[in-house]
Length: 334
Image 1 (tube, rainbow, N blue to C red):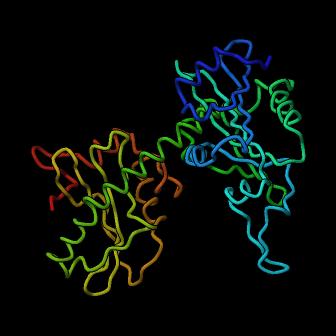
Image 2 (tube, rainbow, N blue to C red; image 1 turned 60 degrees about the horizontal axis):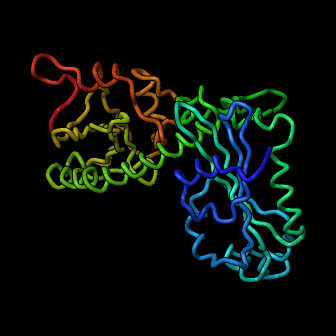
């Protein structure tokens, strides 16, 4: 039953910023005490929203309810408009309250908690809003909802045929509750994105510049697949494969792979695959996958530039760092 639960509040206080708990209403545990639901409710007129704005940008989801959508629109013409910002809606009194909803599950000896933000307009009273928040946890089967279970395959119906949509970045978490899988994947994606930005700026781009300067006939231009260069690395990130479509002085293009060994700060060309020459540039993602699926489980373009890491020791031992005596079989130092 939802109530002002101090045990639940203690769990939250040690795991989230205290400002997120302003206006704490209480919460409820599941029968086994391994899941919880808790909430706050804040009258925006009683606080300085600037103290909350940054924290609200970090939550896992956002919704708006109990408001008149027409009031949130800035019209440019009769048929053209854009949405007002959160700050504008607050300043104009369109948003009167906000609530942080905390949903948690105890898994692998720790609490995983999702935080969702909801703004409320003035179409309901504060008491009615409070009652709707509390009532949510009292619905039948609330503790059995999909967020507490492993993810079901995502399917769509196309021309009478059921098609499963593959999300490769979630596959390593397929046995985790959906809430846990979402948080783990988000964290991994953030870490890998930061690592990609660092490794590209600090090592890959300067390395390509040196190749252009010293071997301009062979390496004239390096083309990234998307915004940045595609990288492949294990979760521990001790070494990184990266690749580019390279144009030479004769305007031929070929896909080349390289390796940066972070342990010894050395670069290599990875020569397991023989480059194929093209007389044009193109989006070469599928070409990478056609290579990788021969020697790894990466068989879908969704693996590229995702949160996925190549944690297959056989891939690294047999196809990257394989050696003959004291010499690497497929690595040429550059």
